[in-house]
Length: 154
View 1 (tube, rainbow, N blue to C red):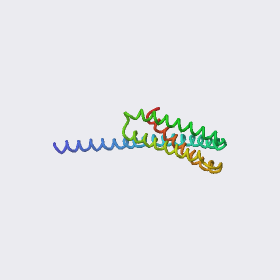
View 2 (cartoon, helix red, strand yellow; view 1 turned 135 degrees about the vertical axis):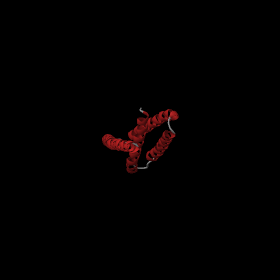
View 3 (cartoon, rainbow, N blue to C red; view 1 turned 45 degrees about the vertical axis):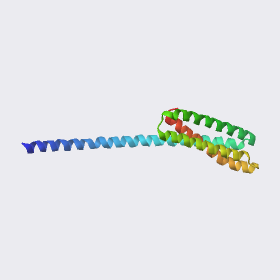
View 4 (tube, rainbow, N blue to C red; view 1 turned 90 degrees about the vertical axis):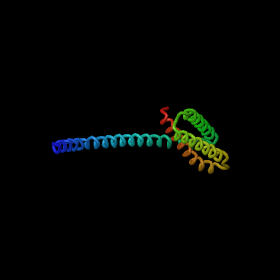
């Protein structure tokens, strides 16, 4: 009798484990499909953002030095304000998010220093050469702030 019970139990558990494999495979397949969809969405977003950034940079390169410095200063002030809001909202967030906000503050400080170097450029050629790097700094700062805001659901 004991052998019959053990055999029945073994057969039932074997059939249950065989039945569980397709569901695990299905779960993995669904997870991979979701990940592929997310990657596609991110790629589309990056492509559209980079096109926007390229168009804005091209337009900014045509601006006069005074117009550009005014526009860049406004952008830096806006970024500082957005970082301040993120800092206020990070009080109840995990420590990694607080570290992320500190990194944003450091990035903004670097951008401000780069802007000052750009502003005191002695010639138009030097100004335009530095402007390209500064545009990239602004773009990465904006993307980093956007990622933090997205994480908070803003």
